[in-house]
Image 1 (tube, rainbow, N blue to C red):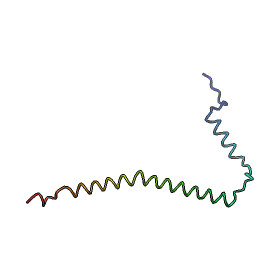
Image 2: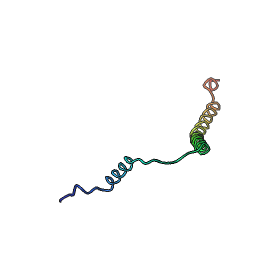
Image 3: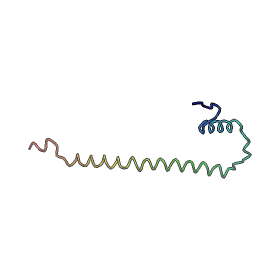
Length: 85
């Protein structure tokens, strides 16, 4: 079966196109004022804080509850010195 080596498949064509677009930079001609910049910084800080609080809520509190239950169970069980008498 004869193969045409000059024909690119989709993956190679997309890579070639992306490389060509990155290699030809253009000026943005954009300005971000101080208000928009502070808003963007505040949004990023809020996003990071939300991710940290979500991690705390989904990981730390169930672990804390599990440790508290384990401690309460250990306090209820009699010690060996109490069972001897």
